[in-house]
Length: 254
Ligand SMILES: [Cu+2]
Image (tube, rainbow, N blue to C red):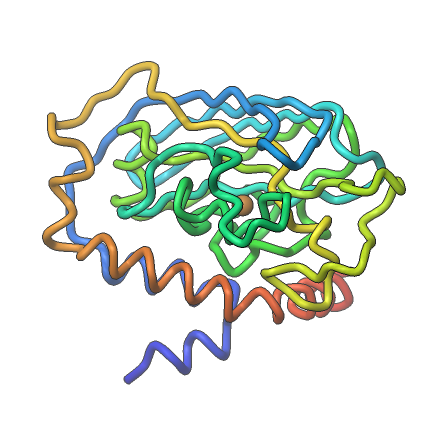
C-alpha cells in the first residue's frame, strides 16, 4: 500500500493526492459563490468578513476579507464541508459540551471538516489547517489566490451551497492575545482561543453550470460520508504536526 508512505514523506501533498485519487471522474463544473461571514454565536468575536470563490473545473480561486478580529494574531481560515453536515454555520445549540463557547469540534455537525485551507501561499489541503504562518494576520485581512486544486466533490459542494467558510481565532477573555487555560480541541499545544471559530458564512452560488441534483451525483461513487470522516480524522491527527511542518518549511525555505 503506497498511500501511507507518501503521506508520511510529504504531508503537504499527501492528503490532496489521496482526495484526488479517491474522487470519481466527473464533468468539469464552473461558477462562483459568495459568503457573508458573521460572528459565531457564543464566541463574541467582534468581526465580519466576506469570501468570494470561483470554481473552474478542479481549480478554485478565492478572495477572503475579514475585519475586526483579534489584532496582531493569525487567523486560520478554511472551507468546511461534510456530506453529513447541515451545511450551515453553528448556532448556540451546537455547544454540545455546554462549555459556553463554540469550539471547532462543536461546529462540525453544522459545517463539517476542513476541506480546503485558505492559506496565503503553499499547500491548501486540510494538512495546512493550522499552518499559522500562512494565514491572514490581524484585524484587517484581505488576500486572494487563484491556484487551489480541489476534488470534484468539493467543487460540487461549493457550487451547491453546501460548503462554509470559517475564520478562526477569538479572544474570549479580552486579554488581547490567544491565551487562557482551555486548550484547543485541535491541538493541545495551543489555547482554544487560537482555533475557536470566529466568523462563518455559507457559500452561496451566484451562478452555476452543473447538473441538477448537485452533490448527490457524486455520493454513491465517493461514499461521501466516509470521505468526510477520513478528512476529519486526518485533520485531527495532523493538527498536532501542522505547526512543526510549518516551522520546518519556514526554516528551509528562507
Ligand atoms: Cu476552519
